[in-house]
Length: 400
Image 1 (cartoon, rainbow, N blue to C red):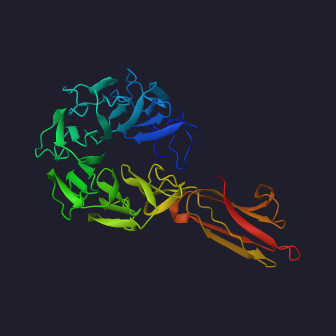
Image 2: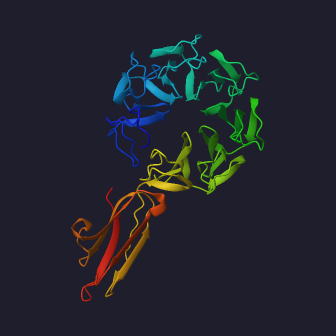
């Protein structure tokens, strides 16, 4: 869902969508989105879709595509995306990169773009992350490495110098990494969270707005997952709680405000199992399989059916929460229905007297089209709507 002006949704069109749209029906095991979209299938094949002006698709051309294109047929085990470059790991632990390389983010010792996957490290790589113009990777021995743009210290090497070769940052103990536009996070095997780089909005979470070019410990223990947006950060603790810090001008932290914070703030108390940071929005997954989103929504990126404004509170996106009226009424005149609809779309008020009949066979008595957060109330007044002898039940259902 969201912006699709360069075909990054892979649906064969260039139209934005504000509701989740199925692109591939089965076999996908991992996804990554930056300036383009990548996905990995269970057979180890790598697929891409979207903008290709810098060769980031890795197909040997500079042609944009709005449909999934296979780049590697097998052997890929992990993928990551930056703004205009991409990385993947093969089953032999080798690291490959393609795309924009103006700051050395591909790590090949040059500053030349490439439109074909290029081998950077031959073995031992276990995890990868793409920042805006920098890249991070882990080796199987727990060492953290970085390359690319370092103007804000996001590589954490104690300098502000760019590098076009992989550089050792932390020698051991690192188990997870995340790159933002100009800041980076990593997680150590003791559950401690560390951060470095740009901190203008408090995205490092250290209580200051001071940029640092050295790793700084933010949380001492119990962190199990991390993610970065442009200038905000997210993490999950071992109790399933979700925490956030940094830029919040569009509600991407999900705390009900649009105020930045330079300290970690608890957003959800339990049940969160996965997180992702977008440009100015955030997504998280709960243990019941529900998908939630918050933040900016100008292109429909939240998937809630709207394309305006922001959501400063987490919204359930999938499964779709249905606004339902289930009260049985024996007799009434001028029955007034009101329901707050949590996402946009076409909503139908249904009525029926045979409660065992499928809803698809009930009568449609009113329709509201809701495409704006400011008018997300279903309103309808029915005159002499009820059969007193049979009783009726009413439901408001969405077309999707």
